Amino acid sequence: MRKKLLASVLVAAMAITMLAGCGSTDDNTTGSTAPAASTTESAATTTVAADAESIVSAPTELTFIFADGDEGAKASMNEIVNRFNAAYPDITVTIEPGNGGAYSEFIKTKDSVGEFPDVMEMRDTAMYVRAGKLEPLSEEITSLFRTTTEFNGQVYTAPLSGENTQGIIYNKKYFDDNGLTEPTTYEEFMTLCQTIKDKGDMAPIVVGGQDIWHMGFLFHKAYNDQVLSKDPDFIEHCYEGTKDFSDETMKATFQELKDIFQYAQDGWTSTPDAQITTFLVNDMAAMMYSGTHMFSQIDAADPDFEYGWFAIPSPDGKTRLVGGAGVGGLAISAEAAKDPDKKAAAEAFIKFFFAPENYKVYCETLNFIPTTVDEPQMDVSPVFQEVIDANASADDLAPMWNGRVGNNELPPDFRNFTYKTLTEVLQGTRDIDSACDELNKTWQVSMQSFNPVTGVGIE
Image (cartoon, rainbow, N blue to C red; front, side, top):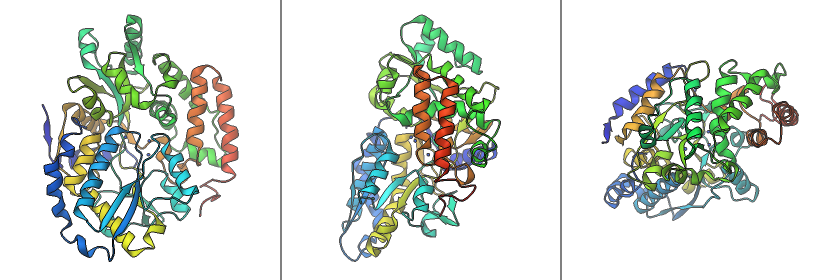
């Protein structure tokens, strides 16, 4: 049974999470996507654009790209774009399909071939701000949000959601049938995994390791447990040279991941993220570790499938979650903004996107907590309510390790190199000491072109 979550409840929940020790600053529902695509609701939203004819002086086309590796994101983005195009007959937003893979590489390629989009989902915000590729957002847009992230006093992204809280999504019937319960400590979680492995009827955890970005989910969990819990400014200290990736906390991160990955399914390196739902609903794996965006995919794959959610406690007993507002979001290219019609159209699209009746589609489909002041009324499942409650009570709520700004911002491409090196460790082709040495070598090279502490690479 679905619960009506009023805006006031969400505001209160987010306020509590901010007090829970979170930092603010990217890589993802209740029910299927069908209700979100309701033609009746879509028709009703056309009234939002009562003054559409006055926005542009001539027919205007905008190109739009977003991370389309997630089916829920693809469905909701298409729905909102279709609504906008119907509401604004003189403006056409054209979605340019992505490759469903590494989004940061995709948008970098688009830029290199002169096809940088007019409007986009932006993740590597700092890098593109420094390159002069993004247009500062107007106060009319930034005022729509509770919080935003500034770069030199300007805001460049309209935050799509709070950070994608990750945790274990599990087969509830399997747990109930076998007397399994949600763990309350890290040791209990590891025992749970071993119990499922010993039964031999399915893998304890499914991992979509074919997609390099998917590796970031569990990596951040271990990195948060071992590194950030002891030194939140570890990356800054690496820039300064007072620490490096041979630090014992980094070695502990790799070891924690080795311990967890012994419970992943066979062939996890060749399983794409898009297939992990299939493993869960077809009794091939008991659990997955991912974000709340997976709820809609599970519902779509099998509406009758019963699933639960829990956070994996840290080894020290605390609960550390990804949460809070991120640095990413919808952005307008600086080049497009040079054309008054394109700029007006892009601003109209962003405002339309975050109108409650449209933003509701995106947030409900992906199980995201809204970022707007005027929040949509959302129908959320009891499972998603658990996530909201967990955000409120977490010991630590902060962005992903690669979503930080300032002196803790990662050099370009270092994230993916770390995940590739991690995969080698988990496959047994590299030991932990060797992995740390490789990270140090790559870090030293990266710092020659990017170091926010010294100002290298910062414009």
